[in-house]
Image (tube, rainbow, N blue to C red; front, side):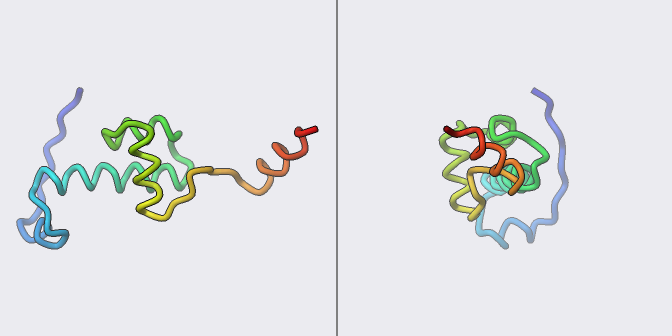
Length: 84
């Protein structure tokens, strides 16, 4: 695993009322959720980035009000057309 050092002002931790370790974990989750929402990463890769199991990542998506299924209208229509 690769370690990355990140410097943040002390005041950011109190913004979310989190200890530094909790704050960093929440940053990982927020980034993974957003990248998943934008279609930049798969659900499995996003869970890995977040440091969560896939089930826990799906729960995080719910907490952030992001749809678990990421289909464009065209992809959804194509999927539905394939159903007999």
